[in-house]
Image 1 (spheres, helix red, strand yellow):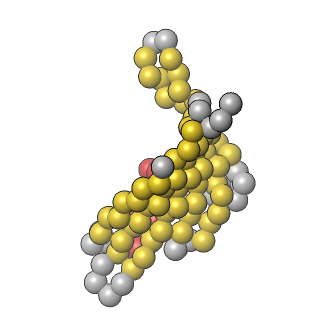
Image 2 (cartoon, helix red, strand yellow; image 1 turned 90 degrees about the vertical axis):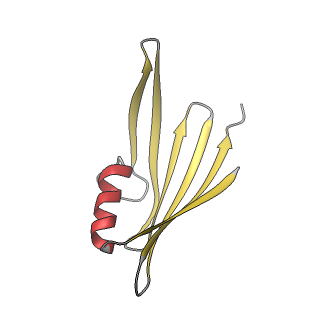
Length: 100
């Protein structure tokens, strides 16, 4: 399944990227190939373990991350674009079920 989302923001590009990296990317080293494992407590019986991999970095224009959890693989292409009056962030996502 593929889908995309676009958000228009009236803000400074550098500040938006800073906040995006702070809140949306778990891996703080930002090196291609780096992996970070983190978990979410779903309830007292289930912990969801997720792996984030940095696929590519071309800031301030784009960062691509891959998220893997259980049988799901999600590739996120995050693009930052500024024109004369606005800044947009576009997410292009590909979601796949892993085959066993």
